[in-house]
Image (tube, rainbow, N blue to C red):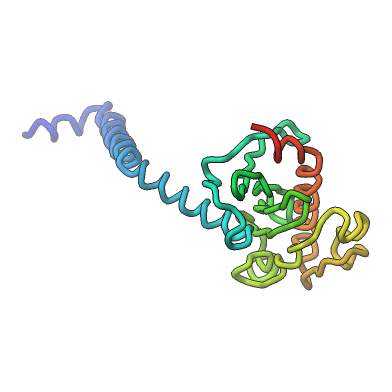
Length: 205
């Protein structure tokens, strides 16, 4: 009888086998993670750079946005990373994320704002809204998100920063009002955040 066959009859055989398999699997995952870490980081940087460029007009900045960042705490004390857009060394805008609770979870919006606090562009970068209803906030599904281009805290007036169902100027979706309402709230909150820290963003660091 082989050694393995002898061990199969022992009480410790199954736990020991599972432990060995788990150890080998963990080692394989750790090795794979280490081997692909640099590639993953480069891919994430490319994705982030592509996202940043979507909310800034072409040629709006001539600096490396990923290398020109600062962090400012929001109203809840959470750090917000700002990517500053410079032209000839002068900060003329910033890109950052804002979020609000949608129907199924948080909706994260990437926002580009110029030095005067006017929207350069917005893109939803993360959400779990209902496909076919709430996902019209994605630029790939509809042009709705472009409705924020050029807006500011004064245009429309604060009470009009809402979907039309609530007396505002932004369209809602049939059967999915909560989702666009959340995006409007996130974008307006982002503009308010920028206004509150405008001098620090434009002149700091």
